[in-house]
Image (cartoon, rainbow, N blue to C red; front, side):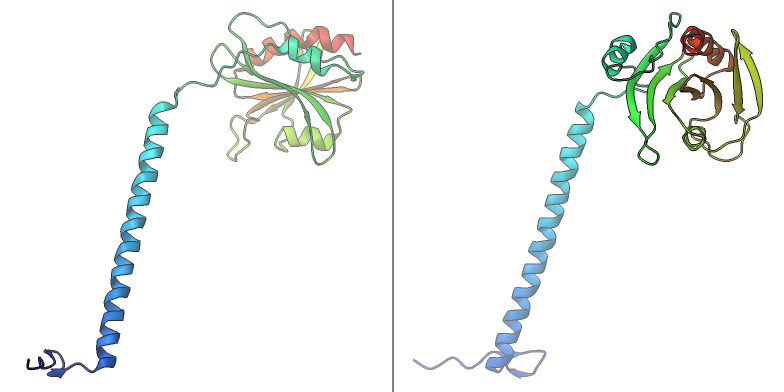
Length: 213
């Protein structure tokens, strides 16, 4: 049987040498691997997006603030153990809810504070901090280092006012704040609520503040 002559490659105008044949096959194999890798990446990305989409559909969502309805008195009773200062638990009217209550320790100066987060009847936020043996640095940090704008007396208690609602810079939750001291406790109220709602909380705190004087 006659041996078939080598195939003439059009681009070369002659048969390939063994080295050229090996190089061509290697290049073809490389391109195939690249296409497979890209295909696998696309499939993996599509699968990941599909999983994320399913999770988004399954997780419940709400446009309103998170309302956990925390039992502040119960948490305070547990947190009170070992603390000489009485933790404040204000009695607020209907429509107020708490979504957080805990002891917080500042990592910079080590100040321990009793924190309660409140949602007001108008769905605004007020955070109540009772700093235990607090220092000016801790107070300034809670108020985003803003400047006092006045003084107000609420139910016999004098508070320093920090009204930042017209501030041009970002002050976080310290849009409005009230600060007072009683014994070894420093009370800081900050948030986005109305002035009247701040006064409601300050009034509810008055008995606890008077007890520490």
